[in-house]
Image (cartoon, rainbow, N blue to C red; front, top):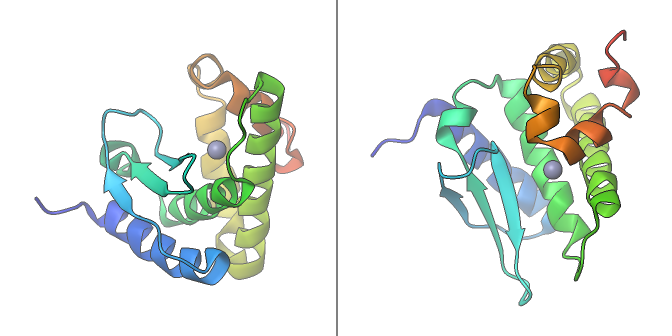
Length: 149
Ligand SMILES: [Zn+2]
Protein backbone atom coordinates (compact mmCIF):
# COMPACT_ATOMS: atom_id res chain seq x y z
CA UNK A 1 0.00 0.00 0.00
CA UNK A 2 1.28 3.45 -0.90
CA UNK A 3 2.16 5.70 1.99
CA UNK A 4 0.53 9.14 2.02
CA UNK A 5 2.74 12.06 1.04
CA UNK A 6 2.86 13.47 4.55
CA UNK A 7 4.16 10.21 5.99
CA UNK A 8 6.79 9.98 3.23
CA UNK A 9 7.99 13.49 4.05
CA UNK A 10 8.12 12.68 7.76
CA UNK A 11 10.10 9.48 7.14
CA UNK A 12 12.57 11.19 4.78
CA UNK A 13 13.20 14.04 7.19
CA UNK A 14 13.39 11.73 10.18
CA UNK A 15 16.04 9.66 8.41
CA UNK A 16 18.10 12.73 7.50
CA UNK A 17 18.00 14.21 11.01
CA UNK A 18 18.46 10.98 12.93
CA UNK A 19 21.75 10.46 11.06
CA UNK A 20 22.77 14.08 11.72
CA UNK A 21 21.68 14.32 15.34
CA UNK A 22 21.73 10.73 16.63
CA UNK A 23 24.41 9.28 14.34
CA UNK A 24 22.15 6.37 13.47
CA UNK A 25 19.00 5.42 11.62
CA UNK A 26 15.87 4.34 13.47
CA UNK A 27 13.19 1.94 12.21
CA UNK A 28 9.96 3.81 11.47
CA UNK A 29 6.70 1.88 11.26
CA UNK A 30 3.14 2.87 10.51
CA UNK A 31 0.80 2.08 13.39
CA UNK A 32 -2.63 3.65 13.24
CA UNK A 33 -3.83 2.01 16.46
CA UNK A 34 -2.13 4.75 18.45
CA UNK A 35 -3.84 8.14 18.38
CA UNK A 36 -0.66 10.21 18.66
CA UNK A 37 0.98 11.52 15.47
CA UNK A 38 4.24 9.76 16.35
CA UNK A 39 5.72 8.01 19.38
CA UNK A 40 9.26 6.84 20.06
CA UNK A 41 9.50 3.55 21.87
CA UNK A 42 12.78 2.95 23.63
CA UNK A 43 13.41 -0.56 24.95
CA UNK A 44 15.61 -1.74 27.83
CA UNK A 45 18.10 -3.23 25.39
CA UNK A 46 18.55 0.13 23.68
CA UNK A 47 16.45 -0.56 20.59
CA UNK A 48 14.31 2.32 19.40
CA UNK A 49 11.27 2.20 17.13
CA UNK A 50 9.28 5.20 15.95
CA UNK A 51 5.60 4.52 15.31
CA UNK A 52 3.53 7.00 13.35
CA UNK A 53 -0.15 7.37 12.63
CA UNK A 54 -0.63 8.13 8.93
CA UNK A 55 -4.21 9.33 9.47
CA UNK A 56 -3.17 11.86 12.10
CA UNK A 57 -0.25 12.91 9.96
CA UNK A 58 -2.58 13.58 7.05
CA UNK A 59 -3.84 16.78 8.65
CA UNK A 60 -0.42 18.29 9.40
CA UNK A 61 1.51 20.90 7.42
CA UNK A 62 5.22 20.54 6.62
CA UNK A 63 6.22 22.80 9.50
CA UNK A 64 4.33 20.56 11.94
CA UNK A 65 5.88 17.41 10.48
CA UNK A 66 9.38 18.88 10.81
CA UNK A 67 8.71 19.88 14.41
CA UNK A 68 7.46 16.36 15.04
CA UNK A 69 10.76 14.97 13.69
CA UNK A 70 12.79 17.15 16.09
CA UNK A 71 10.43 16.49 18.99
CA UNK A 72 10.78 12.70 18.64
CA UNK A 73 14.56 12.91 18.14
CA UNK A 74 14.76 14.77 21.45
CA UNK A 75 12.76 12.01 23.18
CA UNK A 76 15.27 9.48 21.84
CA UNK A 77 18.14 11.62 23.14
CA UNK A 78 16.42 11.75 26.53
CA UNK A 79 16.57 7.96 26.65
CA UNK A 80 14.63 5.65 28.92
CA UNK A 81 13.72 6.24 32.55
CA UNK A 82 13.22 3.14 34.72
CA UNK A 83 10.20 4.69 36.41
CA UNK A 84 8.48 7.79 35.16
CA UNK A 85 6.31 10.11 37.21
CA UNK A 86 3.78 12.52 35.77
CA UNK A 87 6.08 15.38 36.68
CA UNK A 88 8.98 13.78 34.80
CA UNK A 89 6.78 13.23 31.78
CA UNK A 90 5.73 16.88 31.78
CA UNK A 91 9.41 17.88 32.00
CA UNK A 92 10.33 15.57 29.10
CA UNK A 93 7.55 16.97 26.94
CA UNK A 94 8.56 20.53 27.73
CA UNK A 95 12.17 19.72 26.85
CA UNK A 96 11.26 17.90 23.61
CA UNK A 97 8.96 20.63 22.37
CA UNK A 98 11.39 23.39 23.37
CA UNK A 99 14.05 21.60 21.34
CA UNK A 100 11.73 21.25 18.33
CA UNK A 101 10.92 24.95 18.45
CA UNK A 102 14.61 25.85 18.72
CA UNK A 103 15.58 23.61 15.80
CA UNK A 104 12.82 25.07 13.61
CA UNK A 105 13.97 28.60 14.46
CA UNK A 106 17.53 27.70 13.52
CA UNK A 107 16.95 25.62 10.40
CA UNK A 108 13.54 26.71 9.09
CA UNK A 109 13.03 30.31 10.24
CA UNK A 110 10.60 30.96 7.40
CA UNK A 111 8.26 28.28 8.79
CA UNK A 112 8.25 29.27 12.45
CA UNK A 113 5.21 31.54 12.45
CA UNK A 114 3.14 29.06 10.47
CA UNK A 115 4.18 26.34 12.91
CA UNK A 116 3.28 28.26 16.07
CA UNK A 117 -0.10 29.19 14.62
CA UNK A 118 -0.88 25.59 13.62
CA UNK A 119 0.35 24.20 16.94
CA UNK A 120 -1.77 26.58 18.99
CA UNK A 121 -4.84 25.61 16.99
CA UNK A 122 -4.31 21.98 18.00
CA UNK A 123 -3.31 22.74 21.60
CA UNK A 124 -6.40 24.80 22.36
CA UNK A 125 -8.87 22.45 20.72
CA UNK A 126 -11.52 21.36 23.18
CA UNK A 127 -10.34 17.78 23.70
CA UNK A 128 -6.58 18.26 23.79
CA UNK A 129 -6.21 18.96 27.53
CA UNK A 130 -8.35 15.97 28.46
CA UNK A 131 -6.72 13.62 25.98
CA UNK A 132 -3.08 14.59 26.59
CA UNK A 133 -2.92 16.12 30.09
CA UNK A 134 0.87 15.93 30.52
CA UNK A 135 1.51 17.36 27.06
CA UNK A 136 -0.95 20.15 27.74
CA UNK A 137 0.67 20.98 31.08
CA UNK A 138 4.06 21.12 29.40
CA UNK A 139 3.17 23.05 26.29
CA UNK A 140 1.22 25.86 27.95
CA UNK A 141 4.49 26.73 29.74
CA UNK A 142 6.11 27.62 26.42
CA UNK A 143 5.89 31.35 25.90
CA UNK A 144 5.24 31.12 22.14
CA UNK A 145 2.20 28.93 22.79
CA UNK A 146 0.51 31.18 25.33
CA UNK A 147 -3.11 31.67 24.41
CA UNK A 148 -2.80 35.46 24.25
CA UNK A 149 0.65 35.50 22.59
ZN1 LIG B 1 6.52 14.13 23.23
